[in-house]
Length: 471
Image 1 (cartoon, rainbow, N blue to C red):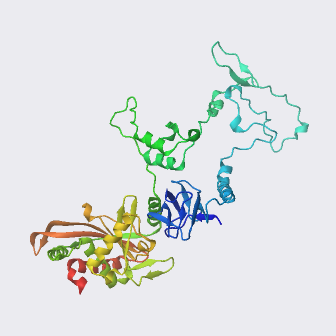
Image 2 (image 1 turned 60 degrees about the vertical axis):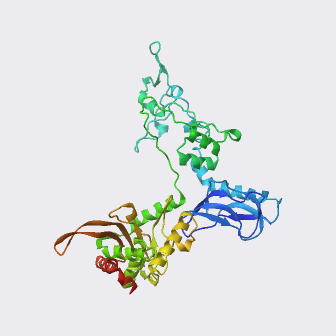
Image 3 (image 1 turned 45 degrees about the vertical axis):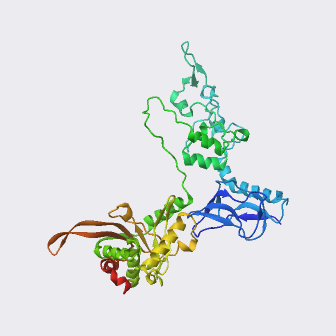
């Protein structure tokens, strides 16, 4: 029996998904774990699978469409040729019900009682008539029945003008000022309705192409993806008086990941009281350890060493390995360190579980494997959620120092700058030393200034004497 296949919630924070690609065509036979579509979520582009045998009978939404989690996207049955008309009708009816409130809000204002024209249907100013209304009565005025009848006002008349001038309207013999009529303005007919496929609409927004300037090549003049590609590839004409080197603005469609990042970080910035603590570490010990490891064929990075040091410092100061939960603080039982990884469409934070119990090489290997799958959009939800503290490192981009925004509900994140050789004073003598700057962002509801300072002191011990990490 045919039934709806709904948009799954592919990540804990996903509310909507975009059909990036239909993998299973209509009529395709499906087996357990067959991939039917690729869906763009707030974290990655995920493969959507089925769990039973069946047949893809109908796609209900096109590629490029944005669909809420739990809404139907396809009809899957047991055999080809099943009648799906009832399900299609039910789907179309549900779509109509969802759009009814918006349609009601956009509906024109009903005509006044008596069959008069609506405001949008008023004639042009040249033939407009003002309503025949009596002046307002005072509260102590006599009833209208006792008052002498007032003469019925005559209709507006044209005031004779000189030859070639536009006649002006009058009211009871007096000219009507032009300022009364000007706000109405001339009637402007609405432009033609643009028929465009959802995929073409998304492509146009992504490429900065104006739909109003495209003649659709699809059925009934429908603008399709090929039209957008052609318009984007066409040379841009240079407007008169504008320098030829001027570039046009480009509108880029926000991915689900970018929308989620924007929403969550805005919430954190507005609702969490934070403060920052910045320190400068003597990193000569890190440099020496990495050089010694390299001579023995052991491949570790400075980032791997910093992650291990952070994990050990969280063991020493467990009050920072915590989260605010409304009216109480939860101190995490395990040290799970998240690491910010940059993606073309945004940012994701894979988590190294039990980082305090793992060696530097194991942390490095695990991080590289997670980062690689993150860039392919292949991380499972449990691999990028549930961290207890995070690290963001921009040292490889030669950033001296920066501050990072918290990754809720974690109470702390460490922003690590570049490792630099700088002039230093050692025992009263000018020398060259290795220095590393880091800034800790703290949720003040969990971490006070003195507590954050204790954590950074513990971290300093492991950064400046890394042998302590293995003792």
